[in-house]
Image 1: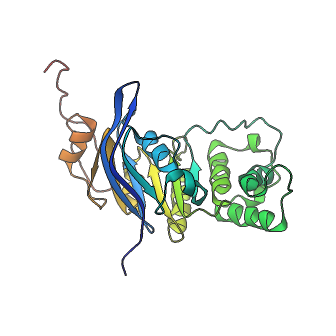
Image 2: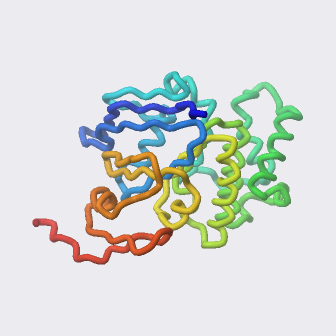
Length: 256
């Protein structure tokens, strides 16, 4: 049975101050995909997520999300940004922090309903944080806080989950637990994750796209050394499946 396409980018270009950040991006995401996007800093990965969300409008090209414009379908997307702006010193417990994810369904004048609170419970159980529901969010570890932010995205009942460097501050055991959660979630929704962690994503994800202004994407998670060299613009050698690439050859001088 074929999967349904939920995101389509055709010849998308994005400029910041006349400098190209994304060039000629063509991408299709299916409803059951678990896609990782890798690439160097400044390569446009976060911008690509924001294009899908409708937070950044391309200067050229077409973007369709669930068959419509990103602005109209944003309600179907859960998003965990790399820098949340969330004030972890704010005196709010874990349960209430996740409950704020239901705000857009209720508005200012309407209080939260039982179904909202039930959804918070399910989301916290999914990310294994229910036992911390009464803990002030600032008292949690960074890894635990990230799980709470994931739960806040999940209470919107997304059909697509976008994650920007979700495990950047995790140690190895925390990473493993987080990826196991995503492995369960991918049965219910499509996931697109920006990451530098080639080790983990080679184990858990289904497809990998390499991005450095241009997208190198071949609908699988097998990456060749020459593809990484094209993206990172330096010589690399893949030494084992599931192990990060190491830069072993001497870099060319900038003026070569």
